[in-house]
Amino acid sequence: MKLQVSMNALLMIKEAFEAFSPVSLLANLSGEVGEVDQEQLKEQKIYDDNGLTDEAKALFGRMNQAIKAERTLLLTPIGQIQRVVYHFEEGPVISVNQKDSIFVIEDPGEVEKSLALYSDIFGTSDTVVTEIDYDLKELEALVLAGIMDLRIELSLSVLLGIEPREGLTQEMLLEYFSKPLMNSRLAPLVYGLMEDDAYNLPSEQLTMVLGELVTKGCIELDGDEIAVANALVIMADNLLVFNSVVSAENYLVGEDKLFGEKALVIYGSPTAILMISKGNSGIRFATISGHDLMEILL
Image (cartoon, rainbow, N blue to C red; front, side):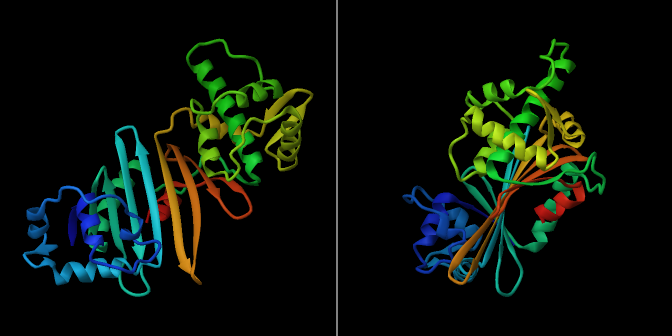
C-alpha cells in the first residue's frame, strides 16, 4: 500500500470521524478544507461517488487508534524528509512521510524500501570517533553547546587561515551568550529542547554552571581560561559541517496521558554523530554510531 494524499484531502477525510487518538495523524491536523482533487482520491480508492470508501474508512479508522507515534525530521543540504511511524495495539505499523502539503501513507513493505536511503546517507558503522556521554541540567547543556560552538569557530578559523583568538575564556563565553543564538550551531538546537526560555546568562550564573561542568568532567578552569575535555574537542572538530540533522520525537498514549521524548542527532560523518536528547531530568550529550542511528530511524 502506498497512498499520496494532500493536506486538504486529509482535512476533508477528518470530517468523517469523531474520535481520535491524541497521537494520530488526523487529530493533529487543523484548518479550513481547501480545494481537493477528487479524481486522484478515486484513483487511489479513497473516495468514490458515495464518499469515503469502506477501505479508506478502515485504514483511517485504524490510524485514529494509534497508541504511539515516532516522528523523525531529517534535514540535509539537499532537502528534508519528515516521517511519522504509527504503532497500534495489534497489527503492523503505518508510516507517513510528509513533503510540503503532500502526505505519503505506507505499509511496512514500502517502509523497508526507504531504509536504503537512510543507509546511503548515514552508513551502518559501529565505530565512533570518540566516546561522549554526559547527563546535564538544561543550563549546563546550553553552556556546553556554547563552548563547543566556540571551539568549532576556532577550528574553522584555523582551517580558513584566519588568525583565531587564542584560547577559550569565560569572557568570550559571556559575550557569546549576550548575542542572539540564531547564527550559532549547537546552542540553538539545545535551546529548542529547553523548557526555560532564558539564555542571557549573568556572569555569576555562568560561573556556577561552569563549576558544574568541571565536576562532570566536561571542562577544566584555569583562572578565566576554559580547557575543554579532549573527547569534546575531537567531536567539535568533526562537526565543522553539519551534513544533516535528525529530529526524533516519540509520543506514547498511556493511562489517559501523553508521554513524549525528544532527541536531536547531529551528523558530521559516519563516525562523528552526536545525539542530544531531552529527558525528565535534563539533557544528555552522547555519541552514537551509524548503526545506532539507523535503529532510531527505524
